View (cartoon, rainbow, N blue to C red):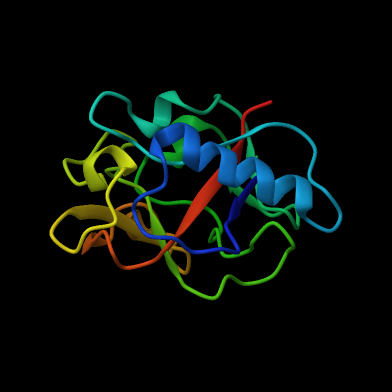
Length: 155
């Protein structure tokens, strides 16, 4: 399962583990609660987002398939937009932090490994309303601009 977060924050997420905590808190407080453990679709300077999630079928909370497997997720297009949050509603903002290139590898723009909310640092972000490569790799933005995150079920 995959969802776009209902909350937005600056790039000071507390690193990958802080972002994962956000995903898991949102999943457990969803109505109804989402089962399992979730990880944020984020890369940092040492970790690629594609290595943080399993090779599985990825479906939105409404059951629509996003990608058939990890290779499909990172081939430049996805089957359906990741445009629903943990409650099955459209997120307020269409932008999501990713720090991730189209192929699932790390971008150089990661808000200092998701510890900076500064307007002088950059992040790569995606758009929840896209099915092309822009879902994960639309453009770079300053880290003080609040955005959501994508959350993927990992177990």
